[in-house]
Image 1 (cartoon, helix red, strand yellow):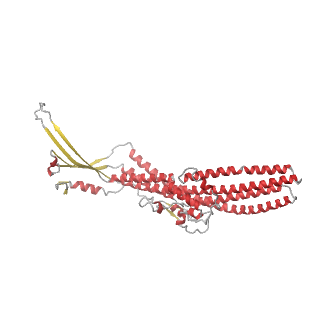
Image 2: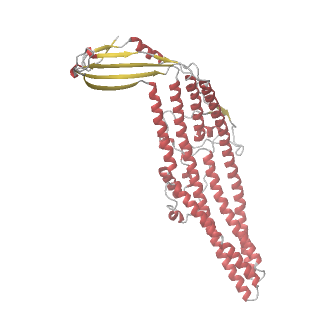
Image 3: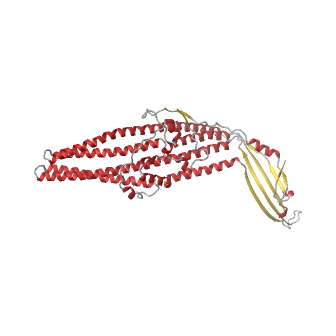
Length: 496
């Protein structure tokens, strides 16, 4: 067999056995177990929502924060997605893993290098060795290549593991986005709740000021005592201690939001200080089946991909126990005159085959296989554990949401009743038919009920956010374009 080489039209022979060996061995089998996605039997319904569950709207889950109909929250989310440094770090690590995968896959092909040299030599004329002194020049050019054959699939398994790890990193970035957006929304809800409570606290102080003035006037008219005045003053002074605490909470939450949005702590302080109409309204929440959560949550998808990577590592370790084969090939020309460098007569080549096998390594290769098998077992158990924890997250969020709604109904009724009781006590006090203590008691009860209701409303919003997070909502595969080829299809399966 002859293969053409075109620089000056000359030809050179390459041994047929070299090409046949390279072609034949490159298609050999791959050692190690093939990966099969795990199947985990999960409940068919939620214990905290035993009724029928409708299919969740995927588009709605991807942008769940928009269902709160709060333009400021939408603006903060957009800034966070664009500027958050943790998301940028995750993206950089994903790019790094993809580049390392390319470097690893390059080991499946040959390595080719080209070189040339020129040398001038002058021999001594004073040597008594029977030679004649003189000068010579040598020009050389050529190619060297080496191809380590992946006979048992160690490199192919390593690439398979790298692909799975890339998928896992992409899902990790999605999981980070879910976590960051839920943290942002929870901080925002907490801030609006603190602002609502601050308004209630100031209303309470104004009411207590009025009550203090009533007590002073009653004392001057002989209808009250100095004790009533001191009680009213003490109640007002205690109430005035509440706003600084709420203002500190508002400041801390605005600082947290500023950093989450990729800025500095005080960047959003003035913007968020503007009063909001109300707390974000909790929408009707979608609820997926337990098996849907497994297929949607990015942290579980990352676990499943790490299990695939750990399985492929067994093949890498197994291949290390078998012989290694490589084919070195060198083609070059050499001549004394530069213009003869590309003539057929100046051609030289060499080809061969090399094999090596470790005869004794103290059990290192076998231990590598055992370690890889244990790594796969650990990754499988981690996946099963995280599936259960994910389902617990949903159940806990449902529990919190259901209990908060029941609690809020009672608190709303308490606010109405306490307000009516305060109006009645105040009316009796002004008519001189009662002392001031019942008014103070009614005021305290009314303000505590209003504050508890505001807290409950904030907790309801945060419980809704926790449910969205537990369902794996809040990452957009189409918009972010982070997945490697083939990574977009979930590999985990669950028995319903």
